[in-house]
Image (cartoon, rainbow, N blue to C red; front, top):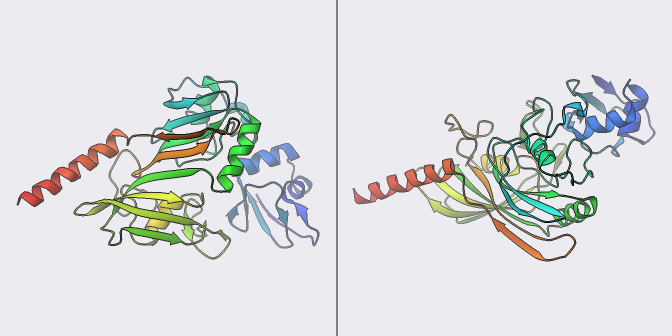
Length: 305
Protein backbone atom coordinates (compact mmCIF):
# COMPACT_ATOMS: atom_id res chain seq x y z
CA UNK A 1 0.00 0.00 0.00
CA UNK A 2 1.35 3.42 -0.98
CA UNK A 3 0.12 6.74 0.39
CA UNK A 4 1.12 10.28 -0.52
CA UNK A 5 0.89 12.84 2.27
CA UNK A 6 -1.27 15.81 1.39
CA UNK A 7 -1.22 18.17 4.34
CA UNK A 8 0.78 21.16 5.54
CA UNK A 9 0.14 20.26 9.16
CA UNK A 10 2.79 18.41 11.13
CA UNK A 11 1.05 15.16 12.05
CA UNK A 12 2.51 12.06 13.72
CA UNK A 13 3.09 9.20 11.31
CA UNK A 14 0.90 6.75 13.23
CA UNK A 15 -1.95 9.28 13.48
CA UNK A 16 -1.79 10.15 9.78
CA UNK A 17 -1.86 6.50 8.73
CA UNK A 18 -4.75 5.80 11.09
CA UNK A 19 -6.72 8.61 9.45
CA UNK A 20 -5.93 7.51 5.90
CA UNK A 21 -6.00 3.69 6.10
CA UNK A 22 -8.34 1.01 7.39
CA UNK A 23 -5.85 0.04 10.13
CA UNK A 24 -6.42 0.96 13.79
CA UNK A 25 -3.69 2.95 15.55
CA UNK A 26 -2.28 0.13 17.65
CA UNK A 27 -1.82 -1.98 14.52
CA UNK A 28 -0.16 0.94 12.74
CA UNK A 29 2.30 1.22 15.61
CA UNK A 30 2.99 -2.52 15.38
CA UNK A 31 3.57 -2.18 11.65
CA UNK A 32 6.13 0.53 12.29
CA UNK A 33 7.89 -1.43 15.03
CA UNK A 34 7.88 -4.52 12.82
CA UNK A 35 9.78 -2.64 10.07
CA UNK A 36 6.91 -2.61 7.59
CA UNK A 37 6.66 1.15 7.01
CA UNK A 38 8.88 3.18 4.69
CA UNK A 39 8.85 6.96 4.27
CA UNK A 40 10.37 8.25 1.04
CA UNK A 41 11.97 4.84 0.53
CA UNK A 42 13.63 4.79 3.95
CA UNK A 43 12.65 2.43 6.76
CA UNK A 44 10.89 4.33 9.55
CA UNK A 45 10.78 2.88 13.06
CA UNK A 46 9.39 5.85 14.99
CA UNK A 47 5.61 6.30 15.31
CA UNK A 48 6.11 9.88 16.50
CA UNK A 49 7.92 11.02 13.35
CA UNK A 50 6.13 14.05 11.85
CA UNK A 51 5.07 13.62 8.23
CA UNK A 52 5.49 16.42 5.69
CA UNK A 53 3.51 17.41 2.64
CA UNK A 54 4.27 15.14 -0.36
CA UNK A 55 6.00 12.49 1.75
CA UNK A 56 5.53 9.07 0.15
CA UNK A 57 4.63 6.32 2.61
CA UNK A 58 4.67 2.62 1.79
CA UNK A 59 3.26 -0.14 4.00
CA UNK A 60 4.33 -3.73 3.40
CA UNK A 61 1.11 -5.70 3.64
CA UNK A 62 2.50 -9.14 4.42
CA UNK A 63 2.57 -8.22 8.10
CA UNK A 64 0.53 -10.35 10.49
CA UNK A 65 -0.44 -9.51 14.05
CA UNK A 66 1.40 -11.07 16.98
CA UNK A 67 -0.69 -14.23 17.12
CA UNK A 68 2.39 -16.01 15.79
CA UNK A 69 4.57 -14.75 18.65
CA UNK A 70 4.77 -17.97 20.64
CA UNK A 71 7.32 -19.33 23.12
CA UNK A 72 9.55 -22.04 21.64
CA UNK A 73 11.86 -24.45 23.42
CA UNK A 74 15.04 -23.39 21.62
CA UNK A 75 18.40 -23.77 23.39
CA UNK A 76 20.06 -20.49 24.38
CA UNK A 77 23.71 -19.87 25.21
CA UNK A 78 23.23 -17.63 28.26
CA UNK A 79 26.49 -15.97 29.30
CA UNK A 80 24.99 -14.02 32.21
CA UNK A 81 21.60 -13.46 33.81
CA UNK A 82 20.23 -11.65 36.85
CA UNK A 83 16.89 -10.01 37.69
CA UNK A 84 17.51 -7.13 35.25
CA UNK A 85 19.49 -8.32 32.23
CA UNK A 86 20.43 -11.34 30.17
CA UNK A 87 23.56 -11.56 28.03
CA UNK A 88 23.13 -14.02 25.17
CA UNK A 89 25.77 -15.52 22.91
CA UNK A 90 23.65 -15.74 19.76
CA UNK A 91 24.54 -18.35 17.19
CA UNK A 92 24.94 -17.46 13.53
CA UNK A 93 21.76 -18.10 11.56
CA UNK A 94 19.33 -17.13 14.31
CA UNK A 95 17.03 -14.16 13.65
CA UNK A 96 16.71 -11.87 16.69
CA UNK A 97 12.98 -11.16 16.53
CA UNK A 98 9.98 -12.22 14.42
CA UNK A 99 9.23 -10.23 11.30
CA UNK A 100 8.20 -10.63 7.72
CA UNK A 101 9.31 -14.10 6.60
CA UNK A 102 10.64 -15.03 10.06
CA UNK A 103 7.78 -15.88 12.36
CA UNK A 104 9.32 -18.76 14.28
CA UNK A 105 12.65 -20.02 15.57
CA UNK A 106 13.85 -16.54 16.57
CA UNK A 107 15.74 -15.41 19.65
CA UNK A 108 12.56 -13.76 20.94
CA UNK A 109 10.62 -17.02 20.65
CA UNK A 110 13.36 -18.70 22.69
CA UNK A 111 13.41 -15.91 25.28
CA UNK A 112 9.63 -16.14 25.76
CA UNK A 113 10.05 -19.81 26.62
CA UNK A 114 13.00 -19.11 28.91
CA UNK A 115 11.41 -16.34 31.02
CA UNK A 116 8.20 -14.42 31.56
CA UNK A 117 10.16 -11.34 32.61
CA UNK A 118 11.01 -9.27 29.54
CA UNK A 119 10.67 -5.54 28.93
CA UNK A 120 8.00 -4.32 26.51
CA UNK A 121 9.53 -0.91 25.66
CA UNK A 122 9.91 -1.96 22.03
CA UNK A 123 6.39 -3.36 21.77
CA UNK A 124 5.10 -6.92 21.73
CA UNK A 125 7.18 -7.93 18.75
CA UNK A 126 10.56 -7.24 20.40
CA UNK A 127 10.24 -8.05 24.11
CA UNK A 128 13.51 -7.50 25.92
CA UNK A 129 15.48 -6.54 22.82
CA UNK A 130 17.75 -3.57 23.58
CA UNK A 131 19.82 -3.84 20.40
CA UNK A 132 20.09 -6.28 17.51
CA UNK A 133 22.72 -8.09 15.51
CA UNK A 134 22.11 -9.53 12.05
CA UNK A 135 20.79 -13.04 11.51
CA UNK A 136 24.14 -14.38 10.32
CA UNK A 137 26.22 -12.40 12.80
CA UNK A 138 27.10 -14.35 15.92
CA UNK A 139 27.93 -13.25 19.41
CA UNK A 140 26.92 -11.18 22.41
CA UNK A 141 23.56 -9.48 22.71
CA UNK A 142 21.91 -7.58 25.60
CA UNK A 143 18.36 -8.36 26.73
CA UNK A 144 16.40 -6.35 29.32
CA UNK A 145 14.09 -8.15 31.75
CA UNK A 146 12.15 -5.07 32.84
CA UNK A 147 11.30 -1.63 31.48
CA UNK A 148 13.49 0.34 33.87
CA UNK A 149 16.55 -1.68 32.90
CA UNK A 150 15.63 -1.35 29.23
CA UNK A 151 15.31 2.44 29.36
CA UNK A 152 18.64 2.83 31.14
CA UNK A 153 20.48 0.48 28.78
CA UNK A 154 18.96 2.15 25.71
CA UNK A 155 20.09 5.54 27.02
CA UNK A 156 23.58 4.21 27.77
CA UNK A 157 23.75 2.75 24.27
CA UNK A 158 22.73 6.10 22.79
CA UNK A 159 25.33 7.94 24.88
CA UNK A 160 28.11 5.49 23.94
CA UNK A 161 28.46 4.14 27.48
CA UNK A 162 28.20 0.54 26.25
CA UNK A 163 31.34 -0.77 24.58
CA UNK A 164 30.95 -3.43 21.88
CA UNK A 165 33.75 -5.12 19.98
CA UNK A 166 33.41 -7.31 16.91
CA UNK A 167 35.82 -9.70 15.21
CA UNK A 168 35.60 -9.82 11.42
CA UNK A 169 37.44 -11.51 8.58
CA UNK A 170 37.67 -9.36 5.47
CA UNK A 171 38.72 -10.13 1.93
CA UNK A 172 42.01 -8.49 0.98
CA UNK A 173 45.02 -7.19 2.89
CA UNK A 174 44.43 -4.02 4.88
CA UNK A 175 47.57 -1.88 4.67
CA UNK A 176 46.97 0.32 7.70
CA UNK A 177 46.82 -1.06 11.22
CA UNK A 178 44.14 1.41 12.33
CA UNK A 179 41.29 2.87 10.27
CA UNK A 180 38.33 5.02 11.22
CA UNK A 181 35.45 4.92 8.77
CA UNK A 182 33.17 7.95 9.12
CA UNK A 183 30.51 7.66 6.42
CA UNK A 184 26.70 8.09 6.66
CA UNK A 185 24.50 5.06 6.05
CA UNK A 186 21.01 4.91 4.56
CA UNK A 187 18.69 2.54 2.74
CA UNK A 188 19.79 1.54 -0.77
CA UNK A 189 17.15 3.02 -3.09
CA UNK A 190 17.68 0.28 -5.67
CA UNK A 191 17.50 -2.62 -3.20
CA UNK A 192 15.69 -2.13 0.11
CA UNK A 193 17.27 -5.24 1.57
CA UNK A 194 20.62 -3.44 1.43
CA UNK A 195 22.06 -0.42 3.16
CA UNK A 196 24.70 1.81 1.61
CA UNK A 197 26.93 4.80 2.22
CA UNK A 198 24.90 7.77 1.02
CA UNK A 199 24.18 11.39 1.85
CA UNK A 200 20.48 10.96 1.07
CA UNK A 201 18.10 10.08 3.94
CA UNK A 202 21.04 8.75 5.95
CA UNK A 203 22.40 8.81 9.49
CA UNK A 204 25.97 9.35 10.59
CA UNK A 205 27.95 6.16 11.19
CA UNK A 206 31.45 5.69 12.60
CA UNK A 207 33.40 2.42 12.75
CA UNK A 208 36.93 2.00 14.15
CA UNK A 209 38.92 -0.86 12.61
CA UNK A 210 42.07 -2.41 14.08
CA UNK A 211 44.09 -5.11 12.31
CA UNK A 212 44.64 -8.26 14.38
CA UNK A 213 46.30 -10.52 11.81
CA UNK A 214 47.06 -10.62 8.10
CA UNK A 215 46.87 -13.76 5.99
CA UNK A 216 47.77 -14.26 2.32
CA UNK A 217 44.37 -13.12 1.02
CA UNK A 218 42.47 -12.04 4.14
CA UNK A 219 42.76 -9.77 7.16
CA UNK A 220 41.38 -10.46 10.64
CA UNK A 221 40.19 -7.23 12.23
CA UNK A 222 38.54 -5.91 15.37
CA UNK A 223 35.76 -3.37 14.92
CA UNK A 224 34.44 -0.93 17.51
CA UNK A 225 31.23 1.00 16.85
CA UNK A 226 30.54 4.61 17.77
CA UNK A 227 27.06 4.23 16.26
CA UNK A 228 24.73 1.29 15.68
CA UNK A 229 23.31 1.51 12.18
CA UNK A 230 21.79 -1.44 10.34
CA UNK A 231 24.52 -3.56 8.72
CA UNK A 232 27.05 -0.88 9.72
CA UNK A 233 30.23 -2.97 9.82
CA UNK A 234 29.28 -4.87 6.69
CA UNK A 235 28.49 -1.69 4.75
CA UNK A 236 31.53 0.25 5.91
CA UNK A 237 34.05 -2.51 5.20
CA UNK A 238 32.54 -3.14 1.77
CA UNK A 239 32.60 0.62 1.10
CA UNK A 240 36.38 0.84 1.60
CA UNK A 241 36.93 -2.21 -0.60
CA UNK A 242 37.41 -4.92 2.03
CA UNK A 243 34.07 -6.74 2.34
CA UNK A 244 33.45 -9.39 4.94
CA UNK A 245 34.32 -12.91 3.88
CA UNK A 246 31.23 -15.00 3.11
CA UNK A 247 28.84 -12.03 3.17
CA UNK A 248 26.05 -12.88 0.67
CA UNK A 249 24.76 -9.30 0.50
CA UNK A 250 27.83 -7.05 0.50
CA UNK A 251 30.66 -9.50 -0.18
CA UNK A 252 32.49 -10.79 -3.21
CA UNK A 253 33.62 -14.19 -1.95
CA UNK A 254 30.89 -16.47 -0.63
CA UNK A 255 30.96 -20.12 0.36
CA UNK A 256 27.93 -22.24 1.19
CA UNK A 257 26.80 -22.59 4.76
CA UNK A 258 27.35 -20.41 7.83
CA UNK A 259 27.11 -16.63 7.24
CA UNK A 260 29.32 -13.56 7.08
CA UNK A 261 32.40 -13.91 9.27
CA UNK A 262 31.38 -11.33 11.85
CA UNK A 263 31.22 -12.02 15.57
CA UNK A 264 30.20 -9.80 18.49
CA UNK A 265 33.08 -10.81 20.72
CA UNK A 266 33.04 -8.42 23.70
CA UNK A 267 30.59 -6.20 25.54
CA UNK A 268 31.14 -3.94 28.54
CA UNK A 269 28.33 -2.07 30.29
CA UNK A 270 27.04 -0.90 33.65
CA UNK A 271 24.41 -3.11 35.21
CA UNK A 272 21.43 -0.75 34.86
CA UNK A 273 20.26 -0.93 38.49
CA UNK A 274 23.31 -1.81 40.60
CA UNK A 275 25.72 0.19 38.36
CA UNK A 276 28.32 -2.58 38.60
CA UNK A 277 30.58 -2.69 35.55
CA UNK A 278 30.13 -5.95 33.68
CA UNK A 279 32.38 -7.31 30.95
CA UNK A 280 31.82 -10.42 28.86
CA UNK A 281 33.64 -12.15 26.03
CA UNK A 282 32.46 -14.87 23.66
CA UNK A 283 34.77 -17.18 21.69
CA UNK A 284 34.50 -17.39 17.93
CA UNK A 285 32.02 -19.95 16.54
CA UNK A 286 33.55 -23.25 15.47
CA UNK A 287 33.15 -22.51 11.74
CA UNK A 288 34.88 -19.15 12.09
CA UNK A 289 37.75 -20.46 14.21
CA UNK A 290 38.18 -23.56 12.03
CA UNK A 291 38.58 -21.41 8.92
CA UNK A 292 41.15 -19.23 10.70
CA UNK A 293 43.07 -22.35 11.73
CA UNK A 294 43.21 -23.42 8.10
CA UNK A 295 44.43 -19.98 7.05
CA UNK A 296 47.11 -20.09 9.74
CA UNK A 297 48.24 -23.53 8.58
CA UNK A 298 48.43 -22.33 4.96
CA UNK A 299 50.46 -19.32 6.10
CA UNK A 300 52.93 -21.54 7.96
CA UNK A 301 53.35 -23.78 4.91
CA UNK A 302 54.06 -20.76 2.72
CA UNK A 303 56.75 -19.58 5.14
CA UNK A 304 58.39 -23.02 5.15
CA UNK A 305 58.61 -22.90 1.35
